[in-house]
Image (cartoon, rainbow, N blue to C red; front, top):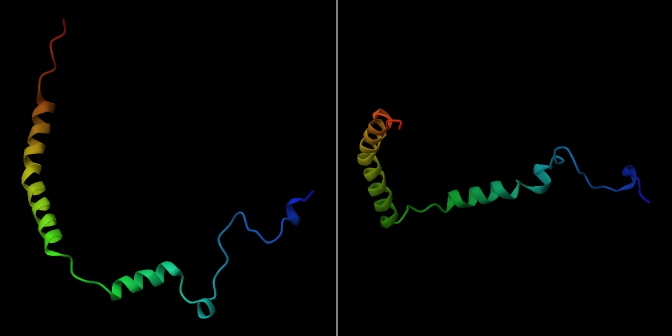
Length: 81
């Protein structure tokens, strides 16, 4: 039967060991981000149009939604029977 000290090299708790960036290169997530930044393309016109229309509708509707919330909050409570 193994005791805790005999389990081998596996780490269960604590931060991961530091990587030597010169030997291993940057972490994969950072490499993927850099690759995406280099290959950036402008969004398609349909997406720009969707975002613009959505933002406009939200901007126009927000005062109406706020007025409705105020009207509901200012309503008199129903009479008790």
